[in-house]
Image 1: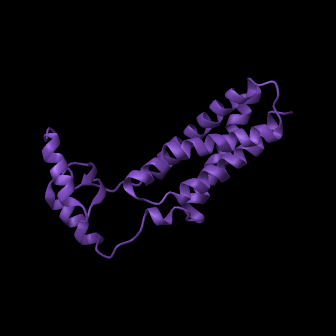
Image 2 (image 1 turned 180 degrees about the horizontal axis):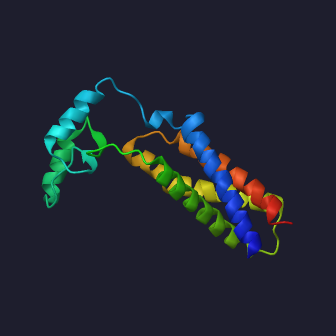
Length: 179
């Protein structure tokens, strides 16, 4: 069990460092947070609208709209603008707590992977590396990529993360778990 715990701590740190580089210094996710010169007007409009904090798909139908009316609205909107808006009333930058939470989640993720791997008798560096990258790809396909399909967003940064960060973790675990 110590092997799994140490593997998870170091692997979680490696994962966390890659995520810091990916979202910060390397700006791999820059396309997901584009700038618009109309940001002040958009924020003023949202603030003045009185909407609650939340994520909105616009246009949408009110809850309880009959299916035939909803279908008619969707058909009328084909070719028209649409938006996905996440709205918060106040900006809060609590990087310390976000980074701590991220680190804890990274340790837990690597712990779960290590726990699955350590139960196999035929572990090799290559099998651990490939299994780790597969875990990254599974998470990418079932989260980020599905969002890309429905909301027509870019997920290239998430694909890069899935392969690189889980490849790094797989290389570490391939070395560590085979000792």
